[in-house]
Amino acid sequence: MIQLSYRQIFWLFLILGCSAFGGPAAHLVLFYRRLVQDLNYISEQQYSEILALAQILPGPTSSQVGIGLGYSLKGYRGALCAWLGFTLPAMLLMTLAAILGVQLTPYLTGPFFHVIQLLVLSVVIWAFWQMLRSFCQTTWQYIIMLLATMLIYVLPHGFNQIVLIGMGAIAGMYYANPKTQPAQQQTLICVQQRIKARVCLILFSLPFLLVPILHWVYPSLWLESFMALYRTASLVFGGGHVILPLLQQEFVETGILAQPQFDLGYALAQLMPGPLFSFASYLGALLPLSSSAVVNAIFATVVIFLPSFLLMFGLLPFWSKLMQKPRLFAALVGINAAVVGLLLYLVLEMGQKYLSSVWDVIFVVVVIALLRTKVPIWLSLISSFVLYYALLVLL
Image 1: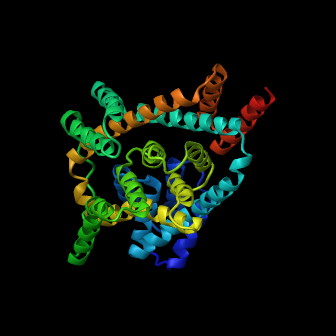
Image 2: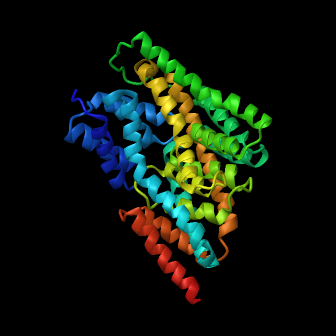
Image 3: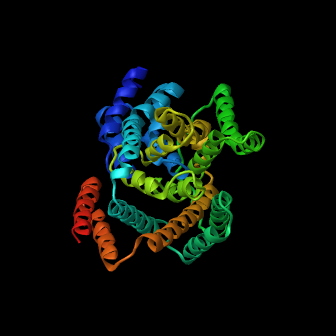
């Protein structure tokens, strides 16, 4: 295996982060072509194992693959360098967008935010349709999806996410047809690696126990924001678009952030290179935590990616053995069906709020049609925004 310095790993992933447009699927292709095919830094088997683990874990798939690749190249620090390089461009752009957005908000009109909301609705409907086709293929999966949608309405905020994931996992283990994954080459794990991996898994669990207690004793927006971001990142199955309903519950429905600010940031995140989780940088810059928007953005970014580090470090050494557990993959089938229900709830809620005319419906349909073509996402969103905004202003 070629030995790379930390600086080389950082610059390699920084270049990838600057050019990684198009979402997780495009990111994964980019990683594969560059590190496996072009540079031969990672073997086919290593890449497939890392990808398989990232796909069943909650959190941002492409970022977790990047973390796993960095870990394979240079251990824990290599993983940190890979993540920082891949995330930094989007983080800087989203933080700058938040700062400029605050300054420009007084000059932005109602039609401007209305079109932004319609763009967000279009992207969510498109993501919902893609996930529905992939994750709901049997009757019981559709039932789980609809039950999940109804449960969101009746369960209290913060509790419904955990119930949905648990319900989906149990249903998957009961109804899905478990299939054993292909056998992987077993690797020897030293005692020190086992200890470090188990420590990471313990650290992953601790915030769920300690932070609520600390917040109860010493109420703080820092602790509340930490738990909101950490809980969201720990429960996001099915892709980056699922962070929208979870973060909206945590920050908009609780009154910490305004809905127009939230929608603007999510729309801008679609135009950025790198992971969609960089949306957290935008939210952090707007949170009233400290007097520095940059410090707040760094805090939010680190927290939302922290579960990914702990889970990858905790499970990657044992992954070859875990891949022989068919029930694990059966549970994931049910979880994904429940996640589709979460997006369906968001589509219904946003549609009720944002669609105010037949022209709005036509605009959303046109945007979705553009997203299904080979036209770059950023070009589709920007061009459709400009045209419909101009139409609303002229009328």
